[in-house]
Amino acid sequence: MTASISRRLTAELLGTLLLVATVVGSGIMAENLAGGNLAIALLANAIATGAILVVLILMFQPISGAHFNPAVSFAFLLRGELALATAGLYVLAQIVGGLLGSVTAHLMFELDPLQLSTRVRTGSAQWFAEFVAAFGLVATILTTVRFRPDAVAYAVGLFITAGYWFTASTSFANPAVAIARAFTDTFSGIRGLDVPGFILAELVGAAVAVWLVGWLLRETSDEN
Image (cartoon, rainbow, N blue to C red):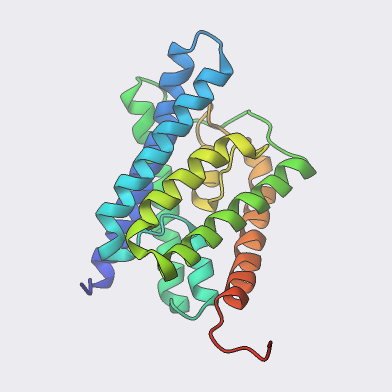
């Protein structure tokens, strides 16, 4: 299926909107119901996020490739599989979709639609965690697309679910999501001042994954 650019951008916007609405909305619900137990709240947030990623990728992969993530679009740009202009439009659609996702979650829970987060997420450990998260996510996508294209949705959903727990940053791994989460002062928020560090770490992680996976999957080699 070859979709027009308008349909591809709509898929990216809508997919990112639903992803962020799930991240933020499940965080709000979890915090409301967990009674202060942060482990339970994080578990609920992780399960909801992983589950919606599977659904969204199955829905939109045939239309746009189901990136929903500027780091993923950046990776495919580096691989020469996405034109620069198209990658720029994808990123714009993803950022707009993410911001609308935060607003959507707030409206569902009768909160102020526009908020600024005060939750501090910064420091070298957090940045390194985002490097690892983005590296792992892009590596998961690239290798699974090569060997098990039918399993991409499940692999991505499972990686992000695990990433909530094994990374210090709870695995944002997505610049559009990081930006959107700066506009929610709820469980899943991130202070706007901390977003650039996350984005830089995510893009570097994606670039390293492209390089390393490209080497791993190279079909011709001088090695014996």
